[in-house]
Image 1 (cartoon, helix red, strand yellow):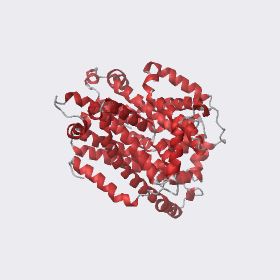
Image 2: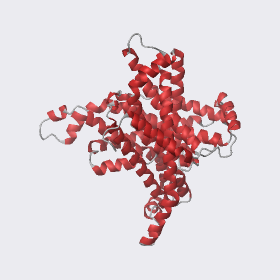
Image 3: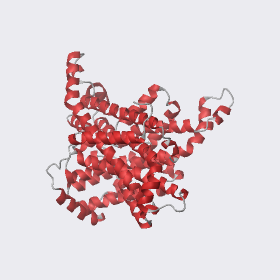
Image 4: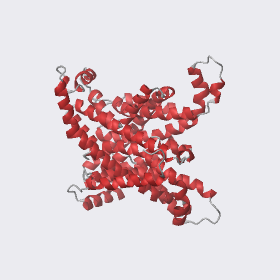
Length: 503
């Protein structure tokens, strides 16, 4: 890779790559009647039926409780690991944790813990611990180091951390923790699609029954929950929320698992089948070869194709939408409508959006690409719009308005930030693309889900390791490209913007 890359080179490279893989993408409609299904969904969404949702209150409460408990556990673990994040073994451990999607963690934990509260909490806490450790380590590194150096010689490391380093990083840590709670609510809702009693479970049930009016009510309440998070989650109430989560989740009953489930999982289930009766190198090589050729390779190719197209479309959505929330571009009422649209799109997790699109288009790459590009494009568009609003007072008095302002004043100034944020989301898009296989899309998640459904957990573990390795590789490539851009775009972005994108 060259030492320096221009913005045009990076943009053109990503765009050309998406065009090259486009002919290999599965964009079929899978024999569905999109117009008929879409019309019935629109009718239901325009007339939400809140009375049909019998257990919505319980599902809402459990969605919040799982999110609070999972984020709190992940945050504490991440904070403990953050001061030691420079150690290679710990960095590798955190990368492994966060490279596996919450749904994949949940599917693994279901084999040991069943449909239990601990399954939901750990499924969120494990990947979030790796994310928190990375982000908190960066906050500590960026904080002023002079107070720590001013302490007397012989001061122990814990005291230096508690009194000289942590207080200076506390403000950005708190901002990021609130953002991560918003992500936790999305993760908690999605866990319902695999059986946990959150909003996703209710949504899945109503869609299967064709009750779109009740499904509409759930989605409205879900968006309201996300949009109002800064009203009901106050820092002084955090201990109360954590205590409530512990109380509620400990009373959640779950079907008992057989004795020795954990031991059986570790000693038998995840051991490669050819090795359960003793070492057999030839059989192991044949077994691995079959997995790599018949499942891993097709899944990797499909995942990369889908993710690359979704990345380019994400950029297109962000590029053309960020001006919608700037009053000097779209007008006062247009900005309100633009804010509403982007908030709704970024509130729904990619998996939930893809689930809706699968009902219309069937299980091809099309629902996954649409969901990924709309959700991630809305996030980037919202953040760029906030930056554009901050730039407007600095513009000259005779600066134009409308599309001219967007094209000739705002876009050139924000293009570095735009490109950097797209590269930030690349890893996340890839993670989410892999998990789309649970909806029938032929990505890596499809083969992982099939292996778990057949109780071939040894095969599933191999595929999960490959999925995690792919995510880590794309993250490394993204960071390398950002370093070689040499634009300083990331340093010029507001701190809250960077925090919001450290997913």
